[in-house]
Length: 207
View 1 (cartoon, rainbow, N blue to C red):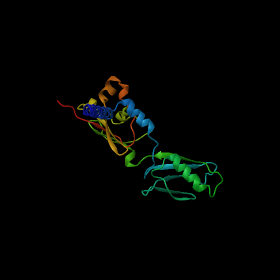
View 2 (spheres, helix red, strand yellow):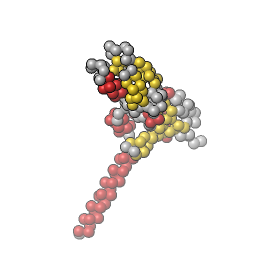
View 3 (cartoon, rainbow, N blue to C red):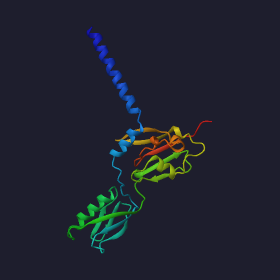
View 4 (cartoon, rainbow, N blue to C red):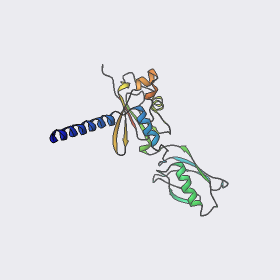
C-alpha cells in the first residue's frame, strides 16, 4: 500500500511537470504582449546616432553631436561622456550631473535626430517578406508595423506558419504568429508587440 501511494505521487508529479512544459511551450498573444509591456522598451543610443542636446537658458552649451564609434560624446564642458547603451533620458541626467559643477541646476533635454543604433536594438525580418530587412526598433512597435515596413508577405509566403524568435533572460523563445490572418482577416490578436532584438521568420509555402 505504501509503495502504491509512492507510485501515485510520482505519477502526479510527472503529470504536473508535463502540464507545466506544455504551458511554457504554448505562448499566446496575451502572454507575449504582457511580456513586452513588462520589458523596458526605451530606445538605447548607439554609435553613429545623431543627438540634439538642449541646455535650457544656456544656448552656448546646447549643441548637436554624433555618437562616436567608441560610444562617447563630447559637448561644451562635457568631455568623453558615455552615450551608447543609455536612453536619451538617462543621458540627459548624466549631462546634468556633469554640468552641475559649472551651472546652477541645469536642465537638459536630449532629442534623437537620426538613428543608427546598436545591433540588439534592431528588428529583423527574414524569409518570404516582400522586402526582408533589419528595421530600427520604435517604442510600441507591433508585428503589423513591421509588416507594413517590409511591404507585406511575398506571394510564396506561408504567413500563418511564421514565428517570432526572442531571447528572454538568455533563453531562446519561439512564438507562433499567424501573419496571414493578421493581414488578410484582420485578426488583431496576432498583432503582438515586438521588442528590440526580435527576429520574425516567414517560411515559404509548400506547393
